[in-house]
Length: 238
Ligand code: C5P
Image (cartoon, rainbow, N blue to C red; front, side, top):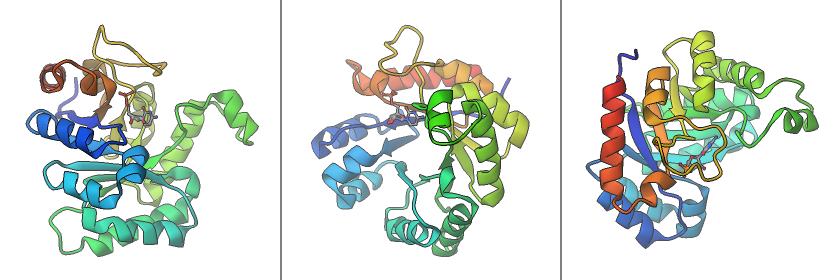
């Protein structure tokens, strides 16, 4: 049984500021953070992201991937937004990750908390064939563990991973890396396009630090109640 509380992030996937602001306000007391990603950020701009982050903790999921200097400079430009979690691609390599961590340490040297740097390893949309097509001859799980180890050693605070990868990552990397887990479906809810899902309780027991839940919350008749139900399930599992 896990000994820590698994926290809940609501993924607000929408290009509409009004919609995201409505969800964010409705969920203010029932989730631990909101996630805004490419769709919202490109559609509404960084000022809109910053406005929403004033009232909720923010997971800013932009999955940066470029040469080390460009990613580090991009992260520096994002620092006024003060997300609690932010993402880069592990495939950018150890130097890109180390430079990113160094920029966050520098920019937040005086702050009580700096954003946690998360690495994305293998996208869950990629299977063994898709990896082979880009020259990687490994199973997705082998590659997740290999990239995850490299990313944590290079300075990432944690990883975004599938619930089915938690056990292998904990075995390889221990308890310290923060594991952030999407692909979560409360029992009985639609799986949508997610192929291998786990319930909130299962992910908590497996050792997730944060779970990311989108449509089961945003499409619910009562999003706040759905989020509270998920929180109860998380609490019962810890
Ligand atoms: O609506 P749903 O709960 O499927 O949303 C999950 C969120 O997590 C989406 O924002 C999706 O882009 C994101 N995500 C994911 N799987 C990954 C990485 C991110 O579902 N491997």
